[in-house]
Length: 110
Length: 119
Image (cartoon, rainbow over all chains, first blue to last red):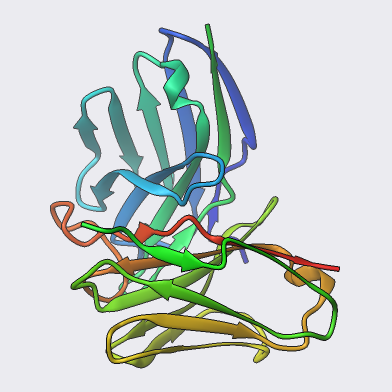
């Protein structure tokens, strides 16, 4: 039962363009949503989060949008840079644990 | 301050053996969570310990177990290893249970992981 889904396993974007990573969830009880970024041979690092009572949160080049009616969230990276190339995991929080998606590998090419 | 430290970083075992992985959390963090990462499955929650007590458990068989010591360091053990146990095992620490983001103060901080290969 995959409660958090990232349906695109990979995404390729040109440097300077917008990257949009998507995530769908099934449980209306999630209260926070987070994005983590993972480079090879490193652990995931926290990127940005959004509370379920908000619909947008912005931090520099990163913006997360939450559409509760569609049970969908997205991460926008503008402008994309080669250093953004990594695997991105979305995660949703129940009161007592984080549930992660399967990840999307983003490649930003020059 | 030092991050989350996991040892060993890489290990190879054969089927039927057991393995113990270690995690030292960030100083002051009392919660330690363990996740298994495999291709196509993302990060799957194993269990979480807080103040030496298991507070939450994922859907893994009883061969997967863990414990936490009084200094918050944690170990996980996998007995009777199977080929499907080959994965990256990630440990994460946080100030409180559950891992969330209250003004950025309580997110999970991950270690680099222990890569287990079962032959």
